[in-house]
Image (tube, rainbow, N blue to C red; front, side, top):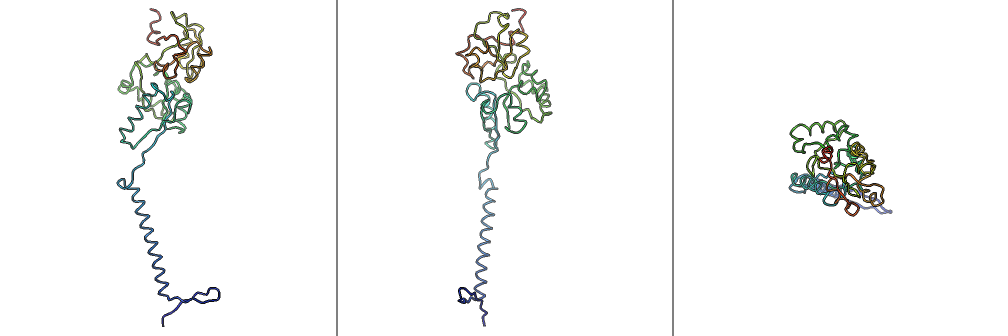
Length: 267
């Protein structure tokens, strides 16, 4: 006689064949097997590049200049180059300029990992790599530094602070990367004595004070207001800087920097 299983519910007895129980269990096992196979196929699809699109690796970058032309050209060229060479597998996302992370703080932010890449200037990194600012006015182009061992030397300076130095770009010729801009025409060196000159991070302080002027550590974005309100009489910035920060309305004269200053005796 076929054995029967029963279940008591609200005083009633319900009978069920053991074969029915076996079939029910088989259905459950079959459904479980289907779910396992489907899950494996889904994850296999993500792992297979042919079945699922690979997500690119993204790195963050902050720059010491505002993200406006022409000062942002070199940063965007670098970002586009990385994406092209990696065929889209590596992309760089620009977090912004000094409004995101102040220029003097950017190298330390990269050291902490708050940002992956910092586009900065040597004066901002001198605390992390002492002596680095000597290269700011180097008479060698970045390409020449790669060949003569200069790049490797700089990388070793940064390595002591746990930072990898990728390299540098030069928007202008060596010794011509910085100019002095004033609110009045400068006819001779003595005209500079006593003037207050803004220099971000106090860069070129020794040179400015050597001319008899006063170095005012003011960030790039504050140059316009400082000039407009008479807080400073001039500022120190690279050649594209007057356009980068819209400083033309508060600027009267430009004094080309160090190539001219090295000829001070003749002048």
